[in-house]
Length: 219
Image (cartoon, rainbow, N blue to C red; front, side, top):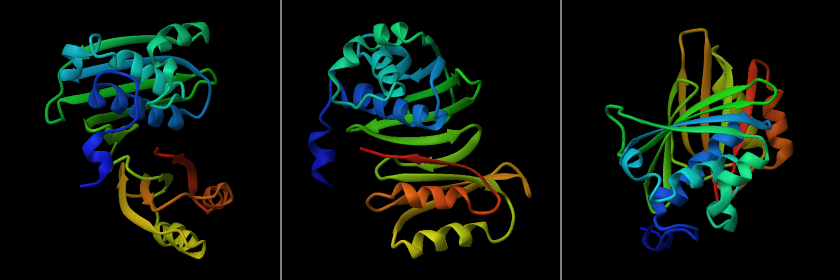
């Protein structure tokens, strides 16, 4: 067990699960959208649904979506900050089987029309796990920098991308792959040690049959 797991993150708010974790899930959603946000729809389930107002989870997730860190003092006023930026948001509660008690589904719409949806859970100590992105079942732990590579499901894609990372001495500590159907669209979730330079991300974007690349910088 590392020190972070024992003492938790530097954060604003009463609970690492309900605030720091929520901020980080929001960070992932905002990074995936990659454009200015027009609206956010957040569905809270489990304990989040019962306590999100009292624990400030609503403020935390909006702060994360807007790019704030768990230690940002603006978290307490993030809802007002979002309104000033013209962001519309709503919070809903519901039930979902087979998920962690601290789970939320975030649906974002950008001002240029892009939409993203993620399902994420806050599992304690500010740690998170992302279980779905745009309907794809994944398992990103949120403990290290993660490269999401969307691509056509054809032979050789894994080796093309991982070989490129190896050329740049980038070590993969965790890898998963999901696809919607054979020959359709697939997504690699590549968790790496350390950081990945911007020029390497650009090189991955130009790999043949890659359709989109998103870099999740985990704090």
